[in-house]
Amino acid sequence: MSAVTAGAGGVRRRVAGRDFRVALVAGGALVLAWAVVAAFWPQLVPYDPLRHDPLSRFLPPGPEHWLGTDQFGRDTFSRMLAGARPVLQVAPLATALAVVAGTAVGLVAGTFGGLVDEIVMRLLDAVVVFPAIIAAVLFVALAGRSVTVMVLVVAGSFVPIVARSVRAATLVEREKAYVEAARLRGERPWSLMRREIFPNVGTTVLVEATSRFGDAIFAAATLSFLGLGQPPGSPDWGASVSDNRVWLQLAPWTILAPALAIASLVVGIALVADSLRGRWEAS
Image (tube, rainbow, N blue to C red; front, side):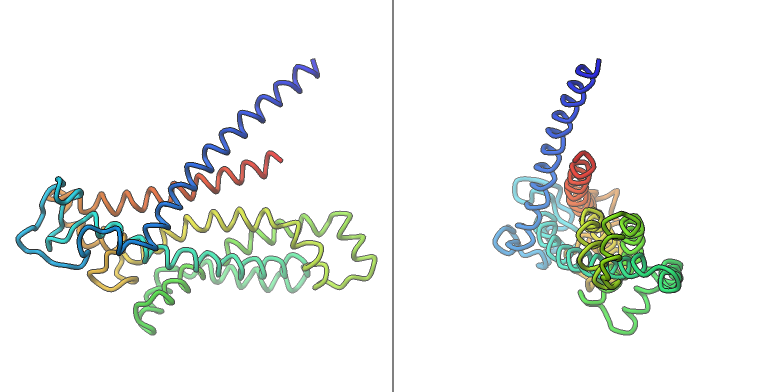
């Protein structure tokens, strides 16, 4: 019976391994495709995404304009391709900043514990209860629209999430025998955190990085949709959805193109994140 059970477990692991690889390849291909578009969109677009053509307003999808045109006669396909760059300027930077800051905060809170942990967690609670949209409005009012402002707002909203996850993993690792042995050798808390605990919470950090990347795409698009991101007329996906929402019944392609672009990129990131998470949990 044990041999049969072991054999079944091996089959399940092989099937799961194939599923992980398929998801990783499919998701990675989607993300890579949009990254290439973001880098080389000026060479890929058939029309200038900012050029107005009043005689071509609301043309439906066809051979000349593959995804039709909007209320200003701008080519929807060109604007969809050009819109990849603003999103992929903000999301990776915001994710990296949030993961670095959140990891540092979570490690400090979990390693030191006691009063330090209590103070850090109360500060994180204060950040969480402050609405990110209000913070975005304040930042834009003070500093104006810019990529830097969007990065700071998106990253700031994710730092507490990352910090809580890393803190929880740190608390688990702190109680293990290897950390206790290092403590008995006389290692100081900073050394324990850097040399012993951090390498063993790396999986949690990577999971948070991939998960927050997808969330950052949505957050950046939401800020642009609300008019807090790129300036008016930008081909940014969130701004395009906002600009064309009143024309949904007349020209649905003007909204579907940027909306599907957002969805495809987020799905690609989610596939990569889920496949990596499944691989790490299975190992």
